[in-house]
Image 1 (spheres, one colour):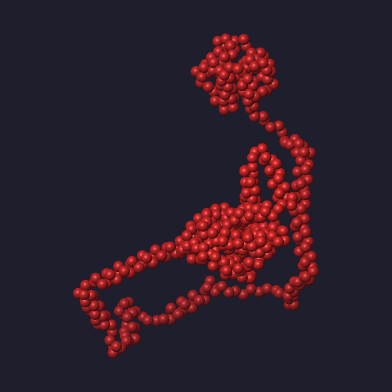
Image 2 (cartoon, one colour):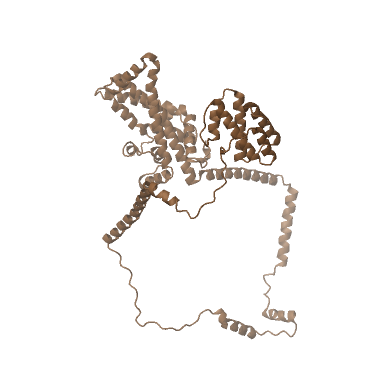
Length: 527
């Protein structure tokens, strides 16, 4: 796999995005996939049905076609693996490759791993990475790890789509049946399929199954290939490697350009400037030769080195190294520089060496492991039984637990939906409501209007509302009023009352007067 020639954007995706990527690849290369698929599966379908025709067991042909799907899945994987990292192969290339490519591990895919839900992910590992033995098993486990659930759901959904397409193809026959004969035709078709069907019906059923599998199986393999690519991107950081390769290519292009410019500048350098540079180099070499000591001269004598102190410190300078040596000796004798110390103590004369612990016998070690497992899972099982018992007996102990609360809880302010008061409504309801509003008791005024509206509505439709009826019940009852204006006025009153009671949003003075006037007009209240 050459990552520098990849044709898709390789980046870490979620598993379902990877499934969509694989299906998009199948749609993009549909012609390159289904042409060789039909070229190989149709002859196999005809051959299998011809072989079982003689023994009158055409259902074996359908079972064999389904069982041999991993053999034909190599077509889809071959096309997609080449198309992602290059150009899609032609029909001739795909058919030629099927003779030698993809036969590794075919026994396992057609045998004990045929019903594996992770077949679509494991097949790219087996056919594209060239591993065998323990390395293949370890690699397959690493790739499948973390996406087993998505692969299982993918396999389940694809099988359900195959079943749905098969039922749809069978139901397509009923579209050509007249409506008056539909029930009889459906019963006849069901009997034709289930009760000793003729060979023609069995062959048609096998062909419908082949069509359904041919439509869904490439998408199943493509989605598994998308999951495989996404898993390798996450494990091997393909996106980072591709970015680094592109960066290296850009740097290489820049380096080539810089080297070209440097070579061009050297070529354009004038000969006089080069000659001057050479002369300057020769002058520097001559000056360095003059400054260096001659080979015949002797080194500085020790007497001159000894007189250096006299020239620097004067004639009174005395060269004596003894004080320096004494200072160094005292420094080394400092206990702060020597961290070692002697400590005296008592120790037993015959000191016993502890014996290493003896290993337990294998049977005892096995018994301990079994007891540990039984204890661990037994505790979890006991916890599960306890939770189940609590859930089953919740009706008995839950009310008792609710009554254990310490102390009475202060009740919050409760707003009554319908203010039912024992006293009757005033004769002049509009004047009383206006008086309450002007006295600064707007909620009482709106409650009075609401009570009056409810009683007027109930009297107009001739029903008796239950005590404590909610606003919704009153609105449903008001729909029986014959006049639309009455229904609109009552709905407006309910809406204003709800805003005031629950949202604490009171209407303005002019809005209150407008509401009062409308209600007085509709329900016949005196103003």
